[in-house]
Amino acid sequence: MFTRPGVLLRLESLLALSAAVIGYRVALHGSWWLFALLFLVPDLSLAGYAAKQYPAFSASVYNVAHNYILPALLGVAAWHWASPRTGQVAAVWFAHIALDRLLGYGLKFPEGFKPTHIQSAAVYLAATPAAVPVP
Image (cartoon, rainbow, N blue to C red; front, side):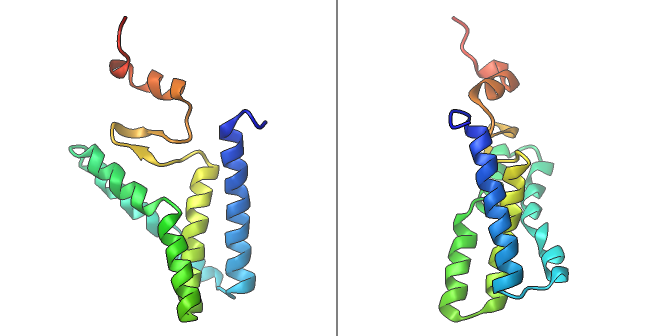
């Protein structure tokens, strides 16, 4: 198991998702309607892929919305400002990212939508045969 990064990443994601949902409800006393309302907001960053002309820009926008840095900073800001609502937003955002990673959706590469940081190099290379140098 410890030699299979994909399994480890998914276990980490399961733990992160559990912590975010429990923290949202127990520590931040969040309501489920707000959780449901905010849960898919980070996926608005997928809109860039509709244009197909700028995959690198689309990947950047997606990756900004789907990494743990911004929700973690938002959580720190919520703690600093003593703002439970801001903390709830951060927890929902964190939960969204964790569920995406648990399902196998990772950060994107500029080459296209499908290859992600969770996939193995073999899967990525098989998806882009033109990128493989021919000996």
